[in-house]
Image (cartoon, rainbow, N blue to C red):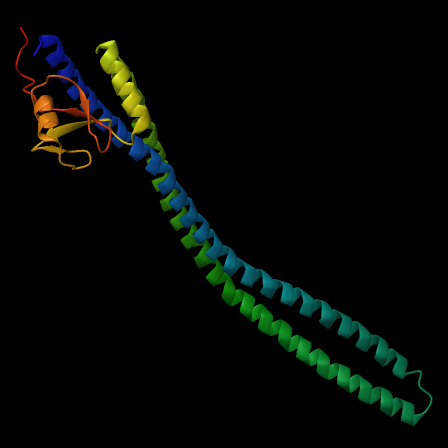
Length: 245
């Protein structure tokens, strides 16, 4: 076995380690937007809870404004009706107008009671709304802090990822054209790290048993082989502390 071939096995071992880090960081990078989306969903959920309470508060206010408007209209109507009573000419007309006014006075009393009840309701609901607002602000702050932390982690991971990609370029450039071409071809065709170890007669990438002859050739560092099952490049465990001569 030539020292050149063994050196390239060492480079492939280093390339394997680099790729493992690259794929791990890529997985972490891909997960960050998912986690941020989950946080944003929680923020929206918290906002929806607050908006639900506020909608109830706003509806009570709307009902109060409507009741107050109806009450004013009823009071105006009664004032006009009482003025017209002075214009009736017969007792029968007067009694009829009086009965009608009594009905409107009853309706006015009901409206007054409704206004008072709604005022009471809205005063009570203000505390509920304030609590919902306070809870939403606390939850929102907590989620936004978590989101900011994730974004900062993402920047750090992205920097490390880009540095590893540059390092990988240098490692790939240090092998022969033949090995580089093989690596690039496999990397484009398979998922995950394109280089795996052959151990105990197995491919550690897909755990398929290798033919004894193939396994022995990999162990003997005689040539470069791909796993017949997963297609990844097979390398043997070598003593990286051993110096070539």
